Image (cartoon, rainbow, N blue to C red; front, top):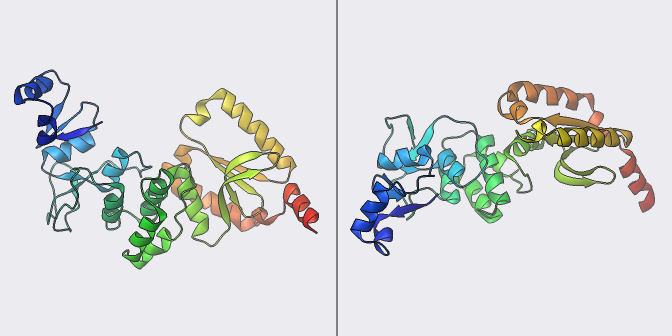
Length: 275
């Protein structure tokens, strides 16, 4: 997926060559830009409308974990409303970048005024994890954010390996519950999240839970974890993205039992060795 300006292509191609590339379908016109055919419609449509893809739409373009949305997020200066199903981000006076798609840093700034605080933090989590922005960039973003968003951005942790993992981690972190991502547990292996002392939460991808070998391996590992004193909860992508209100209630119900505070066997052994 590549986006060119006409001047960029003219550095290596004549006007006739460019027209031939368009005719052959090797590049596609998108307003004043030319894009490769594999570029998504969510990027092409705002470019054709004289806008700039930003917020969640730009995040998807950059490979970040993005919240579910059917809207296309587009920027045009001082434009409160856009047609064609485009969601306007027009509160800034000008586009501050050369590229037509918002960079990770800019899209996060635009997301502050569009997405929920948790969704902004999920984008930031992903951007840090994928090394698209630095922790210092998130700190600067937090300083300029509304208080309710800044509170959540303070919990950004680039160790999470998926957006579903980030959402679940933030649920506990924002309640002051100890939650650690990507922990290696002796006798179990690496787990997505450890809540408290003894609650393992695994956030499986769409593909993961359709893999029979992975399913068998995971259940064997869960049995081993249970023998060590760990409770394991497995969440599918659908549990977190499509049924989150129900899943959230179920997780909080487990939390209220206090089972996550029990000390498992491996940590008890470590404590005895330190004495």
